[in-house]
Every structure is written in C-alpha cells, then in structure tokens.
Image (cartoon, rainbow, N blue to C red; front, side, top):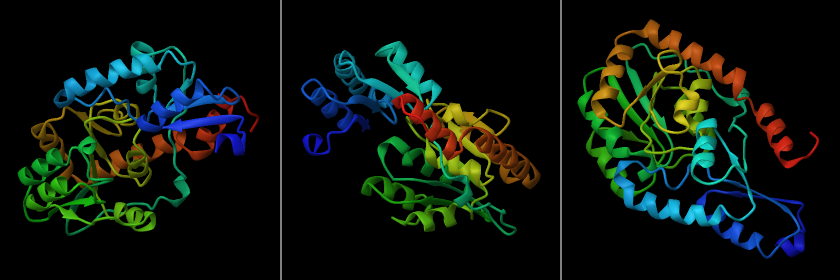
Length: 278
C-alpha cells in the first residue's frame, strides 16, 4: 500500500497498528510518521500490573524509533513524556456537535447509561455492580452497545438493558434518552462517547483515569470518582434525586465541550501537527 500510494504522511492508530507501523517506518523512509495510541497500553489499571509492565517495556523500545506521538488529551501526553519520549503533540478528540441530540430528560424514570463496546477496558463488571446497588423503581440502567460475551452476561444478570450492536444514528438516539451518563473505564485516551454525552447536555460520572479527567471537571460538569462502586453510587444518589442538579450540570458540560471539543478545532490542530496548511 505504501509503495502504491506513496503518502507524505502516515498516521498510525492504536497499539497494534502503532507497533507494526513504527517497525515498518525503519524501512520505509519517505513519509512523516505519526502515532496515536488512543489509550496507552500500559495504563490498564491495578488488575493489569504484569501486562502494564510488559507493554511499558515494549513501548520504551519502540519509542526509540523517531515517530511523533499524537496524544488525544493533555493527560495522555503527560504519560508519554514521562514514560516514553518528548516527541509528542496534543490533538484533542472531537465530534461534530451539530449531530448530537439534546437529551431532554425523562419525567417518569431516571435513565442511567453508557455508550460503547462491552470490553475489559470499559469495566462492565463495575457498571453492573453500580446498577445492582441502585436498583429501584423509577431507575433504569442501559448499556448502548455490545461486545464480549462474559461482560454482556454480567450486565444482563444485574438487570442492565443491553441494546446490542447498533448503528451510529441509533446509538445517538439512545444517548438522547438518558438522564445521567456513566463512564466506568479502566483506562482511556480521550473518550469520544463522553464528549458526545456532554454535548447532549448530560451530567457525567466517570472514573478518574487519563482522558476522563481532561473532559469532566469534577464538581462542575460532572464528577470524577475512583474505580469503586460505592463512589459511583454516592454521586448517583445526588443526581437521581435532584432533576435541577442534573439539568444545571448537564448544561455546563454542554457549554464546555462546545467551547473546547468542536470538530473544526481538532482538524486545525491536526493539520498543524502534520505541518500542513488548513
């Protein structure tokens, strides 16, 4: 493909492509090479300590190859600088906010949910435990997406409504039917789903990990909590019982992403990183 296309720029995305592409860059010298991890492989939380050590060792070796990292959040860039290389620029993830539906809220029920693939990184077990502890009339938990069978089983056993795989239009429509958004991730880069939730005017409760903490301003546009069900339940208790708090927090969240995470801002920063004129 490289021989046929003869690109001036190659941008590698995520861990596997990033590893293979960086090795290939040693042989194919023509383009300028960039790599976006979208969630560093060595930040998988306490349960992945051995994996983290192995991935960090591999990344330290690969980081010697002169490829520029493109971090999708300031906290991801900080981890890259501290652990791997100073060759890093920040280009925030962003979305086309014009297509994000406004979440008007529900009168008869409080619907709490998340959007994304059911996978280890998103910690469905934690989401399920929160749902179990908060189970009561008038409260629903929804996972918009599908994925790994064990995670799906845990969610369904906790009474979480699992939509399964849906297209983008349906996912956004389901997002607009939520009242509160949860992000139980073990690790992140800069989660697009959280940008979309904030763009819809939803208050967000998220784990205090890289990426989440670049979006959620604790106590203002939402809350950052440890990877602990009790912490999520405590914050949810405030929001479930206070529609005015949900509305005010969601409005601040929406204003924040409109100011900082619009699509045109991302493209301008990306062209600048590439050394191109927009």
